Image (cartoon, rainbow, N blue to C red; front, side, top):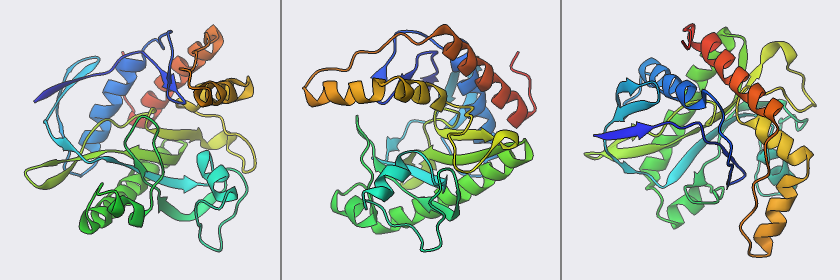
Length: 257
């Protein structure tokens, strides 16, 4: 077995920040327990050891991140505009519009995740044909189940990133499931065509983008430099903590304390 620890550290756009997000580790740990127990899918979770630690089964990770998108949002917009991704003909391409059906949109599992389609995933030997189809079906099923639970709690699950591994030839759900792995929007403020109020890590990404840091990171990388992490304002940190806790308590019906 392995001890899986959750910290209060935060990263965005592949940049690690120096400040912590209070209670983040605790929320993520409790969310992981909740989802692994709630989803009727073979997974690596054994038990919760502390407020920030779970014990999991050791497995060989599959080098493909399984992303499911239910809404036209985030990086999907830019990739669609650049012709990098094909969407169903009847797709509403207004920002934050619901897709006709959830799409499986996997990426490589590397420092900078690169989107891959089935052909590419097979060419890169990330998975076999059979594994790809199983991961696609399973990931979409998990997304649908989680989206229903979120909906019942007053949230929209916009998208989701899952990771799987192998134990004795069987594909098992691994890693963690929480607001670092999905976008969660409150239904009562949801509006197509605008940037959504997010109860996940997107708060930080939006602040970085609005203040030109996302571009700065890209420019620094292009110059071969390691991006410099700015100081996150205290109000952003407080908002993230508050929303992580609210999301946990509303979705699970449990109190964090």
